[in-house]
Amino acid sequence: MAARRREALVQPTLLAAKASGSAPLADRMRPRALGDVVGQRHLIGEGKWLADAILRDRVPSLLLWGPPGAGKTSLAHVIAGSTRSEFVPFSAVLGGVAELREIIDAARERLAYQGRRTTLFVDEIHRFNKSQQDAFLPHVEAGTITLIGATTENPSFSVNAAVLSRCKVLRLHALDEDDLAGLLARALSDGERGLGARSVTAAPEALRLIAQSASGDARRALGLLETAVTLLPEGQATLEPDDVKRGAEERTLLYDKSGEEHYNVSSALIKAMRGNDPDAAIYWLLRMLDAGDDPLFLSRRLIIFASEDVGNADPRALQVAVAADDAFRRVGLPEGVYPLAHACLYLASCPKSNAVKRAIEATRASLAERGALPVPMKLRNAVTPLMRDEGYGQGYQYAHDFPGSHVAGESYLPDELVGRRLYQPSNEGLEKQIRERLERINRRPEK
Image 1 (cartoon, rainbow, N blue to C red):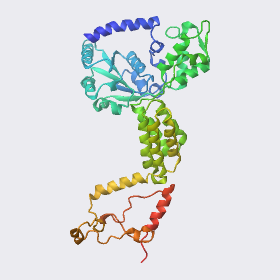
Image 2 (cartoon, rainbow, N blue to C red):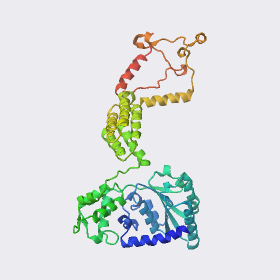
Image 3 (cartoon, rainbow, N blue to C red):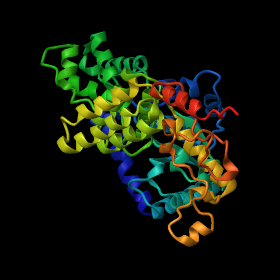
Image 4 (cartoon, rainbow, N blue to C red):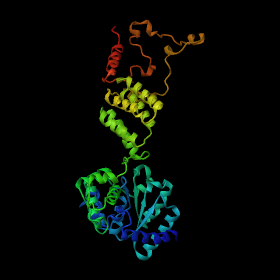
């Protein structure tokens, strides 16, 4: 079978590479036992469910969800190595359904003739479309395989609901700096799999700098350590912060323009502006722009925010947001960041009101409740003699003929909704004045 032939050819090559030290440091330092796993104490700490399931060899099908470098693949290897099952890796990027069938056939034979289970590790399972993911279902249900899927995307959106219901979802967190610094120190001292044969030590500040630059990604941290050590001048035995800086390429932000993180960061931007925190607002705005997000997406969000969350508390907010959008379209990047930042800071700092949003919701609720109510006769346009004879326009009073251009006690709603208040201004900013004016003119005239 193609899959078996490929595995037979590839596995010895990988083992030889690891043994010779030619494999990347991150691959050589992959944990072999549960005690080697860095971080994720909420999952594998003493007394935790997963640690107990591994020790008892009772691991069910899992979905490992977490950012790059958090240890999803490493944890899957440890689970397979610590249990009595055959570990079979499968990439949703490189593999196909035909190869998956071969793997399932081999797993079925292994279980029938050897009594040995198969742990199928599917990396980037979200890359399969949802119909392709259905291929796993009967084999998980029959116990032919234990499925361990790894994904950086939220499984709620990226994994078939049927697969999701048959797997336990485990959320892995980005590694903290202390965990990464400890892993780096271990890699430096490990003479078998790490860099111990080079007899290099590292200043604590250098390891801390690598840990900070890795953004919680163990693979990235080990790669940077290996590069920095390789570039050390001959005869130098101590890694210093300057050596790390020399070995590091320009840091990229932890951000996915099309995945969940995009929505997480844009949500943080909106909530920071709504919460009157211009410092946080500008941070999240620049985080998105510098990661390459679409500036026009951001300008649209600012325009929407100006009406939805500021509204008449400061009507200038909409003008500022629209002007920022227009200015950006004229100048583009990099200078276009200025009008976007200008609008972001203004919106975060001005008074807030969601009365516009609430008025829309209340009006739509009335429409859903009562339907399309008839226009009162007094408000209808009497453009023909017949219409006037039918009563169109009768009783209408021209507002400008009255003091303050207001007819006391008059309503312009359908008759069934008279007295209902759909727009209720807040007490924030200019809207407080609007509220007070409406309260004055809506008082019923004294008899």
